[in-house]
Length: 213
Image 1 (cartoon, rainbow, N blue to C red):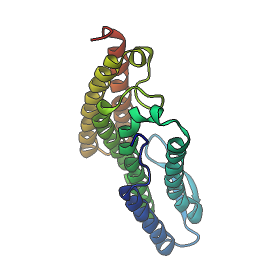
Image 2: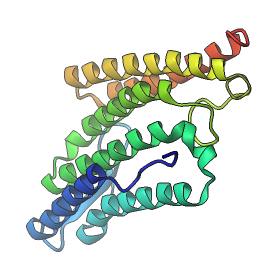
Image 3: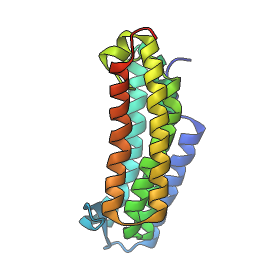
């Protein structure tokens, strides 16, 4: 099978948990409750919505995510998807789990925990992505798609192994940062560094690596 599997038992389970959490929110929160839906760089809520609208955001994003990847798998040519299948199958449940974590924080009204949850989600994404990137092959939809990597399969493999390791290290350091502090500015800086540095190193590595080695 070359197309990524989107509707898997794991994804169905996470969606079910997301639905249960959403229902719990409708039951436990007052109908006139106003919930935060956006946070500023200091971790303070700066945008709000009525209960019904706020509670439907994460389930809506989850369904949209699945439909988007299903459409890609349904209409794109299989040979274009094969190289990135492992990445998609690892990232989709992680993103759904991130939506579930956000929904839990929203329903329990732990507003100040949202920054930490967001940072941990990015850390988990980096660790998982770093683990699956080396399994990818040149494709049109995912990975470090540059002239050197697309023109040279050996460069693609080496670059994604290097970048994957850098992402796992960055993600692990970000987890440690979250455990040590809840300061929103520190966590925001940590997230930016953890995302930008491995990617930049991977790009530099791909251009400096001799062709065919």
